[in-house]
Image (cartoon, rainbow, N blue to C red; front, side):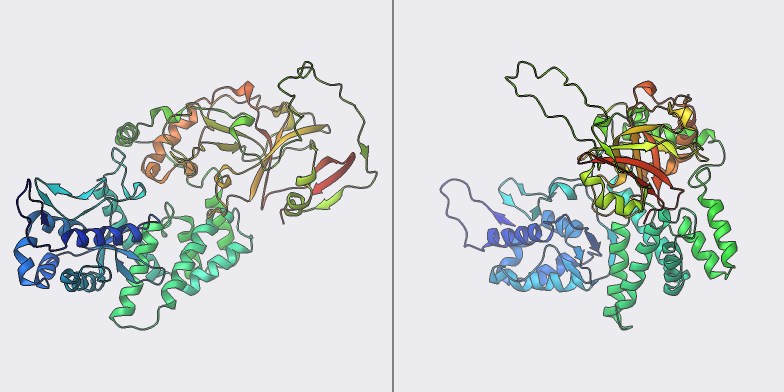
Length: 541
């Protein structure tokens, strides 16, 4: 704390407090530049540690209630490295004025050797009080990414409390399911012998990675134990929604079956039964009156009532990985640019050979890039047709896992569990129907690696296809919703069953859905360089 003397009065001897404060703020800015996860340790007696190491002539000047409150609230903030070491984000002796260096070094040592007590969150845009009257105090200004949004479903304190509970839940699961059991589960999921295993593989690999991180810390002493504790805190803070709740998820079911030594056939049967699309993350009973009241409060607090309205998607709503070669845009000064040129039919020559048998993976890598036109040979039998839907109100708050306020993406899709006939979608079996876009799962549009592995599915949008029998439902499914809506999923499921997705007849992103682990054997006719070649996708990869 320093005192600014007004007017022409003589200033007191320079205690270089401003340099000390600047060093604290510089240290903080450098440590949180990447919006790291912050944690806190017990701050009892921390201000006394600071005062106890100051030179006597600075003691009275720094004995300040405002600064004491700052140290009590923020003085124990630490970041955790990938190795599990805690580093103070405020205190470091280097770069500190000499008269404060010893006190700051003492703070750093005490903070970094105390156990982490909680994830830290704050909605304040300034941490501490910068100045009161003529006095300057300890304070820092966090970057926007570290300011917990106010007005949401949880306060910063409630969020931190939930994370403390998550840590306990995760720690118990790690103790119950050994690294050998988790490794076996992940290996089994990767064989793809389990139905829809891709939906669970992300949680399994995350848990195995954490197990291996903890096992890599050698020793049983205080330092090693503290590293493992810190790694557990770091994993809890950064975990995707639901990952800490191992035992209540499908990965927990698989781990429990493996730990119990059930036969492989029984494990497969039980897994498939629970992963069935009509069962997985789907409520099995109607919501109670109390659940409906809670859902009303949650949606009200999130101001998300408008987010529940859905409509069928148009091509402009999606991010295709392929679309047909577009016609050239006419020049601004063109007189006849508005006229459509005659289309030459039969200009492409069919490659008169049997269809090329190819995997989707190779088709995507070697055929899509050069394809000028793609047509689907509409199958005779029922198959997995689906449609993409999106938010009716583009400005409504996000409710989908992969939708964010700073990067909107409210698109989801639906399919019929047991397939549907071509006629339902306005298609004729045996015809070649033009593909207007090839679209991967919406969860993958803005990320390089999708941790849930949902990228292993793709929709071929077909010209003129619409779900002609659709009447209601299918706007969203519980497994698509953001984590903060998990507690009201039963009410939302009941709502979605009767809600109508708007603009059915204007839909532009309906067609064939192809997924890893699903039935393929679909034939496409691809035009490239004037040659039409038929390809049959026989498997994913």
